[in-house]
Each structure stands twice: as structure tokens, then as C-alpha cells.
Length: 315
Image (cartoon, rainbow, N blue to C red; front, side, top):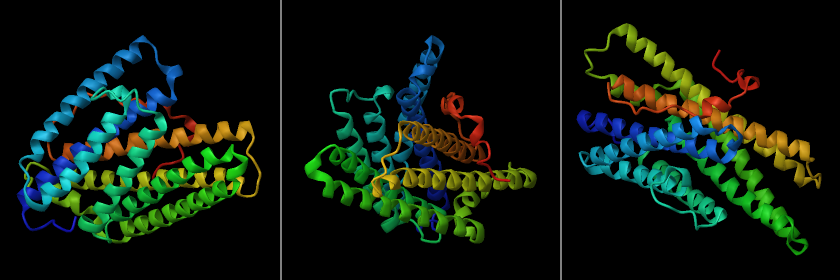
């Protein structure tokens, strides 16, 4: 963040709040993704776990609200931007039960989340993040991906209407263009992660003045943090790639077969499960380093990841 290194106490509190918000988001995403895409895995025991997870998430998020009140100035301003986005996502994810939204059509919910996502990425990249930070380029990638989903929603709605064929082609072109931009943004971010120490600034601030953390543990955490960040970027890029390759078939009037659609759906769900898992682990690691309490939460996405994606790891 461009406001770091001016007030260490506020910096560390912001990093804690930011990771609490991120962890809340990944928990909410984990529950929603599991319930929506893997209903066949839900039995009585799993349902009990989902309810326990939701209760843990809500309690954890409420505590985060209290912590934000201790921030001030630009630290608080930035935290509130992230907080409002996470809060709305939790409201729109029906299974979290923060606020009922079951009467709202699914496409309206998706559109609302996409709009908020794009707005958040714009706020973070334009006001708070350094362009030498991997998070800057990751947020740009997420923004382009959200725009591509926007276009794909229009493309699918136009596709069945003969009179809207030109509109469907325009929407598809828009989506593929944004998916290409998302891939490029991630490539730039991966380059900064490898060659610039700016991307580990948050980690170094979190460990600063922590005399209870021995050198060996610091080195271990630094290595684990780096590996998780690399892994997250690899998975994200793969998600962009498979989405682009699948929808690019429509560009040449080659409608994918039912088998190809099922394969794409399976692969994209696997990548989303893996993102939930790695995103969760990154925030959990940061809070562990800062010696903060963690929620009693059992990650559901781990049950959905198949062996054929095991190659997505840092060697």
C-alpha cells in the first residue's frame, strides 16, 4: 500500500484488518461455491458443518467491524472500501444468511457483485496500491475478469435470439479482450513478485518488532508466503486461460459439444475451489504470523479438488 511506513501501529492494524476481511471473503466464497456447485456432496453431516462454518464466519466478521473502528485516516478509508465489498458479497451469498436476498434474481445478484468488484478494484489501484506490488496487478486482473463475466452474461443472453447475433458477437469480443488483459496483468504481477521486494512489504511489516518470532520461523513463513502467492497467481491464470479457450470456440461459430461444456464447467469449478483454498491459506498465514485468533472453520473446497489438478503447485 502506498500509505505504509508512516505509522507502524496503524500499518500493522490495517494488515490485520485487511487479512481478516480477506479471510471472511474466502470463507463466504467457499460456502457459496460448495453449495451452488457441489450439491451432490451435501449430506446431513456436511449440512451441519456448513451451518457451523456460517456461524463462525459471521462472528469473525463482526469482530472485524470492531477492529476497523480503531483505524484512522487513509488506513480506515481503504479498509472501509474493502469492508463494504465483503459485506455485500456475504449478503448476496444466500447460504451465509447475513441478510436474505432469495427474492432477487440470480442474474441481478451477479450483476451487483460484478459492479461492486470492478468499483473496488478501481478504488484500490487508483488510490492505494503501488504499481510495483503484485496486488496491484492481481486487482487489475480481477477487474478485467469481472468485465469479461459481464460480457459473457450479455453474450449468453443474446445467443438464443436470432435478431441479436451482432450484439452477441460484440459481447463475446469484449469478453475475450478482457480475458487477454487479465492474463497479461497476472504475468506482470508474477514478474514483480519474482524480482521486487515491494510485493512482500506487507509480510515484513507484519513480522516487524515481533521479538517472539525466531529467525528460523521468519524464514519459514517468508518461504511459505511466497509459495502461496505464486500458486495463487498460477491458478488464477489457468482459470482465465480455460475460460478464454472455451468461449473462443464461439467466435468461429463452432458451438462446443455438451461434453466440452461439462469439461469446462468441471475445470473452472476446480480452479475456483483451489483459489478458495489458497486465498484462505494466505490470509490465515498472515494472521498466524501476527499471533491473532483464527475462526473455527473447516474449508469445504478441499473436498472438491480432484487429483488431476495436483500439478498446480510451486515446485
